[in-house]
Image (cartoon, rainbow, N blue to C red; front, side, top):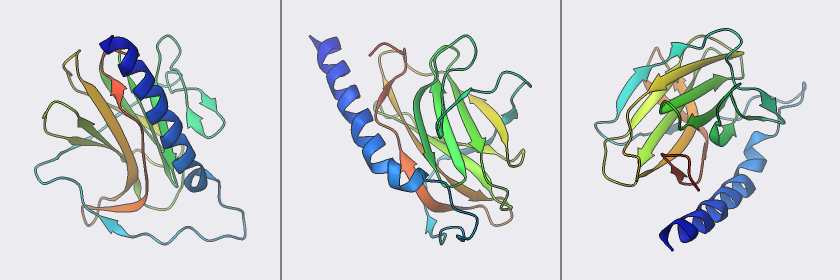
Length: 174
């Protein structure tokens, strides 16, 4: 029963996240300027981790504006906002952070849990058009939620636009 309800809520959460993220994921036209950046905060005590450059050829494939499955595993909860994309690969507990805009800022993917583990943020400071990964060990019965946003490494501040995923089962079983 729990698994069935979990699946229904996950699907509903994913649909809601997609509906709310569509306006923020439209690419800027050539004559449009980047959206105004507004500073946002992450939870106090959130660990900020510099992502490891993804191995060439292992980057998630592109489906529309979202990152999809890496070559042999699923990448769940794809979410995107201006300049950043992210997803969660349950096998190996890997967070993917993609930087999509050459604007001097880094892509950031915050990871939150539903069981009280401290949140962390995976920073991709490899430059535009790249992917970085961060690994953490998650409780298999828990869920994670992703938040993509921009990060200024010079000031250590985070900025909107941002987008959230729905809750994603850490074990990948919806």
